[in-house]
Length: 230
Ligand SMILES: [Zn+2]
Image (cartoon, rainbow, N blue to C red; front, side):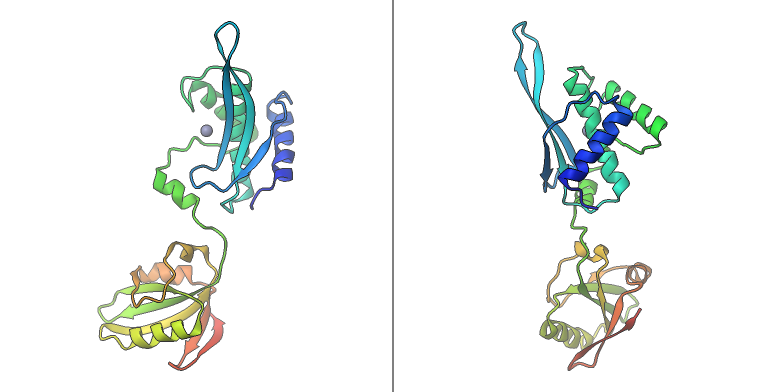
């Protein structure tokens, strides 16, 4: 699901009552399309008259780039609410996800059966998580080479380009066969979409698995006919 502001507000109120004794003040919620975080609780700092620092002007940013399972959206909101609780109560933690944060996180996970985590993921894994996860239809060419290897190519949905790829790659000396499929599996979003006469090597078992349920397209070299389910 892609969260909306009313949804986040409703979840904020629900978790505030359930997990924070309703003590968290309402704060502005901002939707974000950034590629670097799922959620973020931000604030400004100012100096009090006694010289100590005070957090103020809080905002909750939630990412809408990813289509995540609802449970992960909820866990992201709760994760940020823990940051908010620490900041709004002017508590000091040993680091961004320090002892205090982990104490609250573990207590909430245990008491409410949540799966909130502190991200130890590498930036490439986070990027993967933030990659395009919206289903879109692609034409996938599966190329079988004579040496037993297999590859795929994600093609634009333009008949002339598909035919051009099919005819030229089928005729290549090293190529045994080219098969065409129509799929909206988000797995294929990660591959470049072009009509260049190349292919990305991929294990045949992975291809078969990812194309389960895809629509097979028949091509006789002159036209393409959308056919049966794979
Ligand atoms: Zn955090």
